[in-house]
Length: 305
Image (cartoon, rainbow, N blue to C red; front, side, top):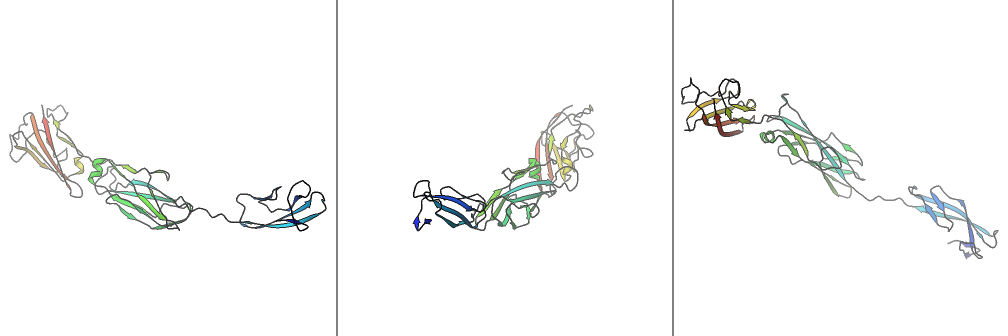
């Protein structure tokens, strides 16, 4: 507390009070009329000396110069760790035909960003996609740092993916703050702010059976056509009449050279030189993918002329 002539003072304009005049006030500080000091935001931490003069209101020549030390402390930020991940996918198409086949691969790339205000250690990714091979990590991320090269995932396409027409999944990233707080985030396909799974459409050789044939030389539906069978050369087609007699049996069916056109070619041949009669037949299609997984499809086949 300031004194004048050894007596405590009160700042004001009445008799017995004192006036206040600033002498030296450092930048970032303001000496107020009531004697208090205001510190501006973002003023660096440190000790500041404020010098001012107090004079008796009724005797302005009775003055005293005072120096006061103002201590500005550093603001310790609250720790707010956070992390974000973006996952993108690229179909590699190893054979270059534009179609997805069993055994071809997808490369997943990951962009991991420290979106908090403290550094993160032990940053790693967990991807639940069955069959994916992950490489990279764990890593360190400084505040604001983005890493786009440390993590990679390689996935081999399976028949179920081709049948579905797309591959969808979502990874999750984890990191640890200096206070041992573990933060995590689910991946988005494009933004650090979202949590949408990464979906990659794939166009593959999906088997589709066209179960009507009319071999009457009008150039329409002249053959039993199986869409996508060319992708599965290890195949077998059997066709039975309504009495269960095998009338057609061939391996490596390809819709062109090995194809059913309404003639009997079974083990028990029924007038192979003549076309089969109109009616309802039953087909059995068996085929293997590139991983030797066996598939079977069966149904009715309608023959008309």
